[in-house]
Length: 98
Image (tube, rainbow, N blue to C red; front, side, top):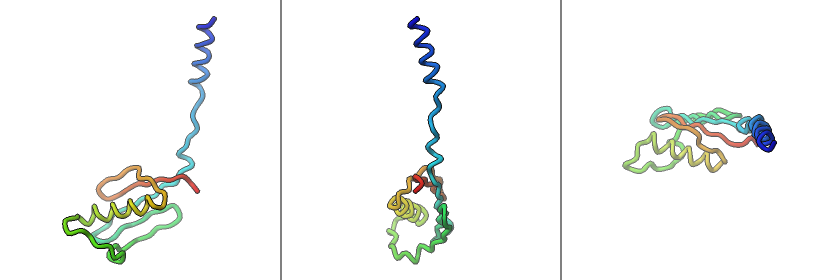
């Protein structure tokens, strides 16, 4: 009898589906496009930023693409975005909906 009860409890626990938590998240993308441009594709806006207007000095040995993508990732992290995926030109971010 205990064996049957354990099997029923296991089946009941296995049939419970977890709630999808990603539905409460928003997605944003930052894309490198050229020597001094970044595209911020946010849920409520699309922004093209000329990085030369930011007045941030690039270190002498740094590659501009890597430097500006890291800069953008830090700026997005300050706003509560979490980097999920990246490749050589894009970073995908997500955060909990406000």
